[in-house]
Every structure is written in structure tokens, then in C-alpha cells.
Image 1 (spheres, rainbow, N blue to C red):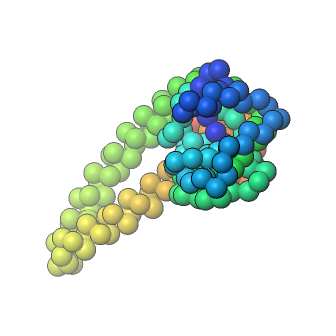
Image 2 (tube, rainbow, N blue to C red):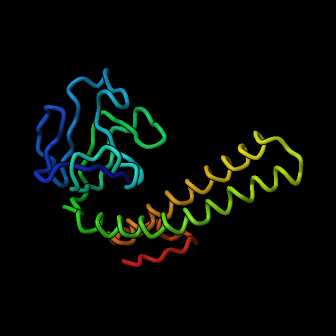
Length: 177
């Protein structure tokens, strides 16, 4: 399952302007030129990643019948993209997500300050270098960021009624909307 956003009219961007229609497949004109971020039919496996390049908030569940040509950490590209389902304009969900983000950011900011001071104290008490403490904190932050992005994705899928393996994980979320 992959995701792709379009503008409200459901047309492609970058001068293509073809209409995306549920159940139909759009293909590139020159399959030899397909390169991620430059040319091709892009999508993301996570909604939160698809949001990074969204020209609007009309969300589609899509697939690549011809296969994926190239993958990056937040997107992939193929020679074609089939619009499996039009989930419509999800502005209301994004507004609720923003509120949820704000509440979680406040919680994380309080925890981060505590973790920062704990890392400094550990460096001082264990007589380790500041670089070691900084590296430890960076590793903690990276793991926390990945966990947070997964929770954001789960929140979005739950709100949109998308039930799959991703939403059936053990992570606990509260929407607080």
C-alpha cells in the first residue's frame, strides 16, 4: 500500500495536469528517464512521508503495477501509478493531527530537557568526553524520532480508517482530538 497527495482537483503537478481517476493507471511518457525526485510516478509507503511533498491535501491510496524502479527513505518511483482509492480532502484530519503534534511536542520538549541534563550529568559523573555524551544523546534522539514518526503514521491511518499491519502494532496512541 502506497500513498500520494494531489491538489483538490486531483490533477498531476509539474505541468502534466492529467486527471487522477480512481481505478485508473497513469504512466510516464519515457520509462527510461525514471529517477526518484526527478521524473516518474512517485508515492510513499507512509502518509506522513507523502505529506512532505504534498501539493494539496487530497489523499490517494496507490500502487505501482509495473513495479517500483527506485526507493529512497521517504518515497519511491515507478513508471506508472494506479489510483486504487480516492480518500478525498483530508484537511480536517490534518488539523486534528496538528493539534496532536502540538500536544506531543510539548511532552517531548519537557522530556528532552530532562534527557539533555541527564546526559551532561552522566558525562561529568563518568568522566567521559562531551563528545561521547553528545553521541549518546544523538542516538537517543534518532530512535525517538523514528518511534514518533511511526506513531504519527499509525494515528493518521487510524483516523482515516485504514486498517492494515501497520495499524495493528502494539504501539499505543491516544488521539486527544
